[in-house]
Length: 166
Image (cartoon, rainbow, N blue to C red; front, side):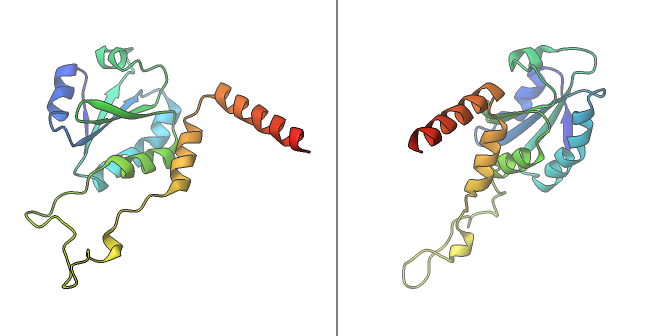
């Protein structure tokens, strides 16, 4: 479920757990990219009940949360763990949104036995439970969140090195 908030006090209710992910979607009803990515955001909220998914609607103009987090584009997704900002995505970028939620969302604990367990040999349990890290998604998310000026600089430097080696 996606909760709509407008104040710092409302946000504080959701960020009291220092290990829990909170994703804030700064959106507006008139913003076409915001409306395009809205179903994905709501789907991620349903799939990740162990994280908070919040919406700040800026249709009527700015508010204190947009000012607090220096939001300059819509949609902007801010990822908090507790009250600490961990990541930010500007624009409607479905792959980056999915991979960042996966990266920071903690799986719901199943109770007292939340460890990986041991076998009789003393070694860890099945490797199928080991966390995986997809470098490709990380690089894609990093590249898509890089400013256009930095992208141009990287391409120019790569071209310079390429032609220098020829």
